[in-house]
Amino acid sequence: MTRKFPLIVLIFLTFAATAQNKMKKAEELIDKADPGWTLVKDWIKTAKNKVEVLFVDASIAKDALYKTQVTTRSPMGAIVFMTGGILVDDGWIRILGSGNSKFNRTLPDWNKGKSFKEFGETPSFLLIADDAIGGFYLLNGGGLGSDVGKIYYFSPDNLEYEQLDITYSEFLEFCFNNDLDKFYEGNRWNGWRQEVSKLKGDEVFNFYPFLWTAEGSDINKSSRKIIPVQEQYSLNLDLRKQLGFDK
Image (cartoon, rainbow, N blue to C red; front, side, top):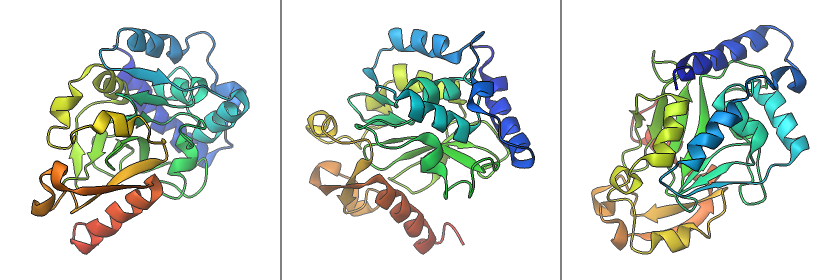
């Protein structure tokens, strides 16, 4: 765990370098001497929460790694290259990898147009995971504050970017071992696990009344429907603007 912060900083240094120089080939990003996947696998083996590693397509993973421009020595690069994504707590949290039929999004493709325009540019943030209720986890690249390399939660119950003060590696620890019932207290309805386990990784539950309203404070009384995650993300951003959070 002692090396996690330098690697996260390295991620954004790599992005900054590739923004000015030619993008590195996938082969240059694959670290066979010190692969981060060895570390991530150990964390998964000892996880308290249910963790499902999705099958990876090698050719798609190689392309995703190239587009991400992050070494596989880092946990993020390892997850992009070695997994189709990771599902936690029966799919309540979805950690982005290189995509899978069950989770049809890659980390770089999902971020393109949101945190950068073209591959190789330095992102102001990276969307690295999301949850079944339309919450999004972001790795700060400087666009969210001065704490570069730290994770924020774009919360559906207040539409704010909440500072979690943890790195990417610590975020994995949070997903694998934290008391998620406590973290999501008030946002899990009766029978949620059975419904969420059937949800695809590119879908979320949309609630009405909205979770951030007084009327939506009791999630068991709200109506819910399944919508594309892209639709929910765009809606969250639009609502922030309507409420005056963003100009």
